Image (tube, rainbow, N blue to C red; front, top):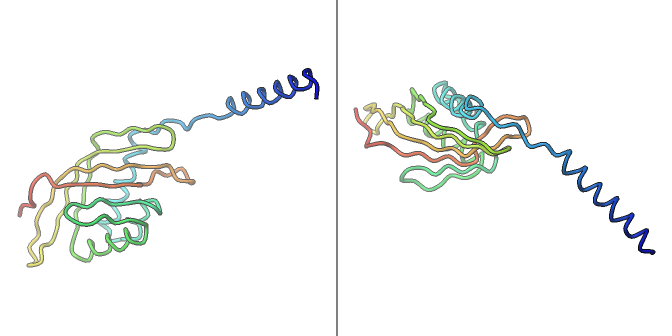
Length: 158
């Protein structure tokens, strides 16, 4: 191989790399409305007592970091967790987005929640707190949670 043919191959290779880099367009930034849709869908699912719809707000590999409980990982385990919460009497869930952000196909949302929780003695108490969700855009373009964490502002009050 001659120097001239080596330079030609290098030039073609460099042009292909630059072309490929120029063809890659980053995902458009997500709006706060898009990023917070996951939690609005989640609250609606819990209020409708639909554990499958609630679990569908999470990626297959998602993890929930629960207050005072072990982490729950994977779609099936998340489905079972929310089914248990619904069966235990969690209802009247509402969420309020505080802040969002995204970079490409990854995003986050922080906010406040409120829900009614039935205690073992049948009494209903109000639980209020804060949450953080790490999100990814799935292949359908929908934002789903890959990590959710929440905590109460104070012990639930009746």
